[in-house]
Amino acid sequence: MVWIEKWIHHLKAGMLKIETRYSPLSLNQILLCRCSDHVGRSMRNVLFFLTAFSLFLWFVIYRLHHYLTKMCPKTKLQLKIKEKEEKALKERRLLNEEDRRALAAESDVAALQKQSNDLLLLEYDRLLEDNQNLQCQNLGCR
Image (cartoon, rainbow, N blue to C red; front, side, top):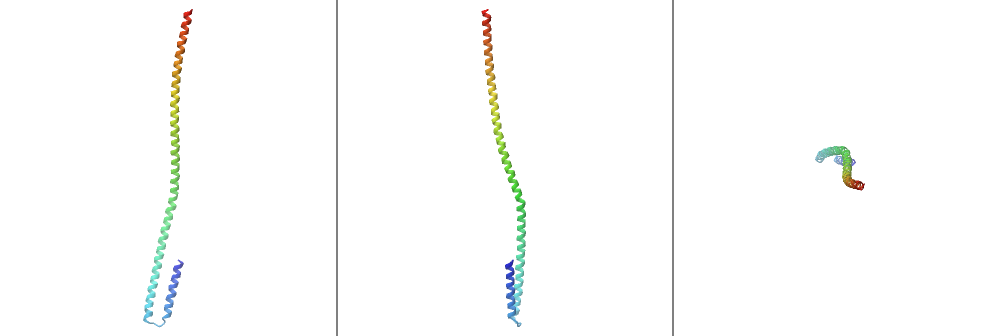
């Protein structure tokens, strides 16, 4: 804004020089007065448009700042939520893997129990047979 004030001051000084140069009333002075009025109006128009543009630019920047400050917490929150979801997904995968291992271990234990039960039954049957054979031999001997 300082350069605008300097420019306005320079134009006013130039118009003052023009006015003091032509002291007697003449056609040139009348034309210059009309020109200086035109220059004054032009300067006012330029200042008006510059002020309006500055106001518009300020409004745009204000709204941008408002929206950015409004959106930043949302994006931070969304990032935190996304990180938590990824962490939960990893934990769920680990739990699923542990569950699979546990199920596999349980099925192995069940298979081993069944196998040991079958072996115990076979051994029991063999011992019963041996016992009967021994009792028969013992009774047959008497």
